[in-house]
Length: 216
Image 1 (tube, rainbow, N blue to C red):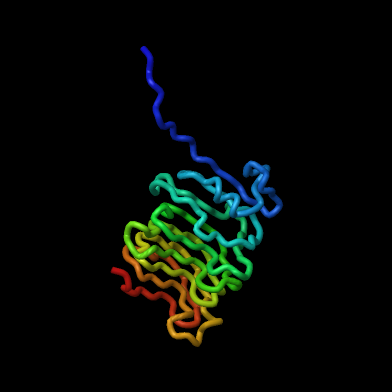
Image 2: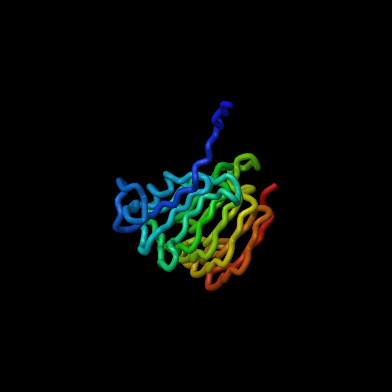
């Protein structure tokens, strides 16, 4: 009896690591971690996890995080347990984290502080291209701190739906542009079917949580 091998063989999920003393020529293991977040996310596949070790990372992740297949096989970027991780992009970036396109789905970011004091707009922007077929969805932010954006903490718009915001601390956003009406908010949701649970939203210049039906 001969059995034909399956055309598709699912690889086991892989855990990678990034550290400030690493190198992007390393394999991304705990002992030999990558150096940059950009390198770390570039190797991720559905089901994989990227652990970020203690330190400050002066990078933005602009539509570079690949999507997962489902909540059973998400792509996860997380602070290593017990470590304090800060993302503080350099000047010249519009956002710290940006998602656009339907392929950006089933993504988890966990336990990271996003200091957006150098970016031009929101700390996190989840947006589409104007149609339901082209929008990011099922992005889960959990245990993040987002602060110091000149405009706003987190924005969803253009049909970017089914996202989750869990145990976030969103504060001190919008102080630079506080005189512009509409800027200066914490969490701005103008798309459908989003979850907000256990968040602390305070000390933002204009509003804390805004749910606004703009799309559709």
